[in-house]
Image (cartoon, rainbow, N blue to C red; front, side, top):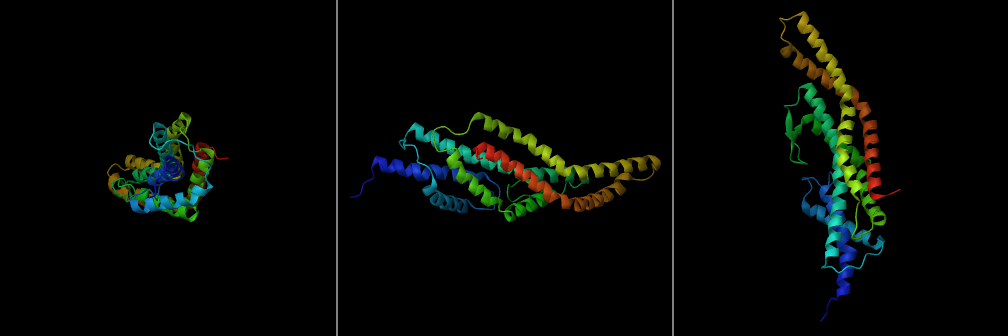
Length: 259
């Protein structure tokens, strides 16, 4: 009969299961692949395929007994690394969703909400429009391939061991919320400023002609002006997208210590 020795089990766990935990955690949390649109079976198969392709390129693994506390710590660190990368990628994507939320509330379209199939949360129509546009641009610029390359290089910069990321990295991830709000405000600022001028003009008109119903007249005009301003601001969307995506990837490179 054929028996498995302890050394063979340890080698199998180190060579395949530990990288699988890091890669699968990333795929469960990152945008596009980690959304509800993609089933869990597809994500698992994709993680298994990439793990089998990556294993021959990985550095030597630590020799730790598979059923020990050290092995459990390594598994937790791999899951934490993958979830951290996926979460920050979600932050990069949702800054555009937040920008659409700002614009929609100023235009009076805050009530026009629909269910986001990727997250299952009700967001405004403009936020969904920005999210779809961001997703298509991300795929067209091979951003998913950059993420795959990043997670593969992370095994060289942060090798599989009992120690993972430092506490400074988690503080930077937490401060990514302020970065998301500031960048979303930069995207929405031209439209917000222009709509503020429109609302100020309606305020002057209401003082000059009190008998005019500003709410009845102002709402459709504000909506039309908002759509026109969004149309005129679309040429500047791509440069902002490239800039903010590059900033997000630079932060991820710092997390993974990739030069």
